[in-house]
Image (cartoon, rainbow, N blue to C red; front, side, top):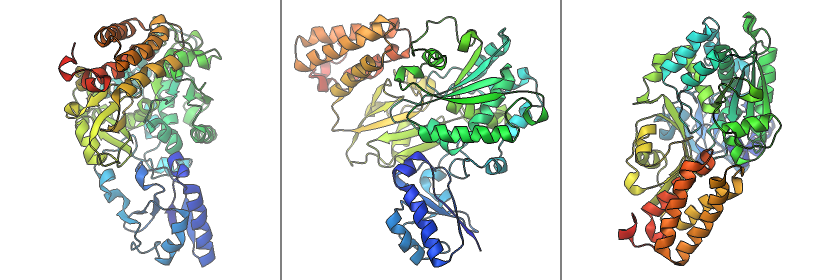
Length: 517
């Protein structure tokens, strides 16, 4: 009897030795004359357990982890293929609390299927959304996405349906769908996991978007540091084209959509949608002034839908199960789920997909387990390097776009970086200004010059040189950057700086009672 063993091919698992683990399992099984089929699945997102090896059984998959190549011989000695007795055995994978407490919609297949097997994809609700879309008019497709309440998962949280409706109604002999997969925020990896671990889902979502807005060509702008994602996408695009899910005549419908993956330029600012368009056109990645909006004049001057990976990856399920199914998850204007990514000084780092509504504290402790160091959590940066630093007093903030905005923070892409009580928040604030200075495209003065001056002012504050005057100058500078920058690069840099200054004044040498001065 053939027994199937799953070993992840996700980048995180590979970095932790999954390739050698898979090779050792194949070698040891052959030496013992056992019939083992090793399937390279995606990661479940429980990164502290990677490489996570799973064995298929009549009761479901049984997990073992973290497994090293040196552990493989002992696993076979303990007959792990049929007996869950080894010390590394975690029991049924689906019963692991970290995973069981999640609400996986977008990531329902991730870690379960072979990412490059279209048969696996089809066996797990794959392409049901596209088939439903092919029976609808473009306006009906756009309306379903609108009614679902889906908002952009890249940071701005703009309603996806409104963006699609604008492109649908725009005049143009050519329209495009562009996926912004230049995932550059610190502590984020959900886009990478989709591209590596379930690429057909993204391809299907983009195809539906193309049919919905009247675009017959799409591009995925992939972060240059993601070689495994880029390779997986190209393989999946070739397979989807060969199977009739892409091309001139999608599933015999007469509708066309062609897709291409492009490597990004390696600049953080190219994650801004207009700089990304410039880069796609072969130019230097510099932010464009808006208006005109890309939905009207976008790639090569044509109407263009631009969405993040997670936004587009949510679309197939919405079309397959209906707008109400997705809308019924979440709270307020934050509908559906968001894959949160726990990183930094966290005990259980990884991906957590849950519906909007729980608190930041629940995410940090119920899932994350507190800090890896065992010390108290002092601050959490949510939303990437330009997100605010949230102190313990804000940990009961609900995971909701509007709730975070109300306390001067952003959910952004769902990335969290955790810091314990040994962190120097003045240094973190300085880093934010320095990061902006290094990554600015240089087009607008508030970002280009303001960030450089910001580093200098913070240095003077920490050194105690005319501190009250310099604090006033820093706040004034942040206000100029917030109000005068062309894009979020300069416009959001004040978030981490001011949050550090307001909530952790003692790190700047400022008396606590004077923090609001």
